Length: 367
Image 1 (tube, rainbow, N blue to C red):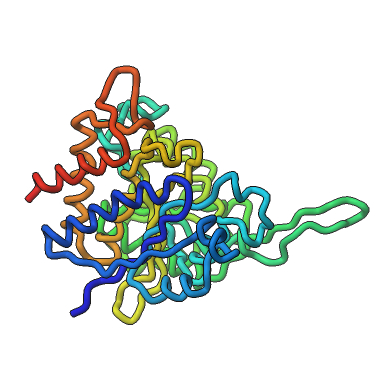
Image 2 (image 1 turned 90 degrees about the horizontal axis):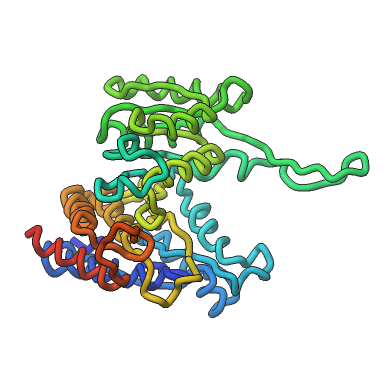
């Protein structure tokens, strides 16, 4: 049997720095857990533009379609701000999502015990928080037609269309229900059925899908109330399923409950391939952070945890994903901190590579 395949796209800014630590962890699993990956590496974003004049080369796109999973670092930076919209670094990421048809974006919001006081909310509200937001990623107002800016009665009018088909809502809902089955068996669907016809359809379709998952307790909530509830009592939620626009907003809101973007991974999943694995792209939530690029200050944890999500969702290695996530948690419990996690009350400051060292040491101790 061939090894699972993984395409690494470090990207721009701190992307290569954090990805270097993930490569060390991938090597550790090969050497210590008999879990070897066929790893290839390529360019995306500004790095791809510098070499090819486009943010994602066609050959790279073809490779992304063939591998079992793609792991991406970050894209963008001020050097590319003046480029035409069509070749900005972010277009490379959007092309990957679109052409791989990655319709379910998984955004966990987990507050590690050692970081509970980093949140802007009270510690007792966020301590132990573990939410999964499933955002529909390929439809809705970001993609609907008609769209654009035109003149009407001597005035500019901007138009974006919120559009969803039954099938688009259903496939994301099934992904969310499957996740709920593996977690706390609770799913809250968020929309605006009180003022939007697309919300009415959303609620109807999710309710219909729920009949295939009788063990999951389904609830519905208007998305604006959902935003309020996330900052009032976030631990009431287990899995949240919502559309592209609301998911964009709600997942960023939930991200800040945890205290640091440097800790947050994500996954974008599509339809199963011939081998049964879903097409998948994993990436940290943080950006390219050009202000600290090359300084050894970046926190690699989000990228490391993105690889843990790949272990869990693409490679059926849940126990090894638990091992890696626990290693990160143990490092934090020891007070080891990259610059983004330092507070006035102390901690041991470490560089990007030293954080990688610490995680590897905890992995060594776990066997």
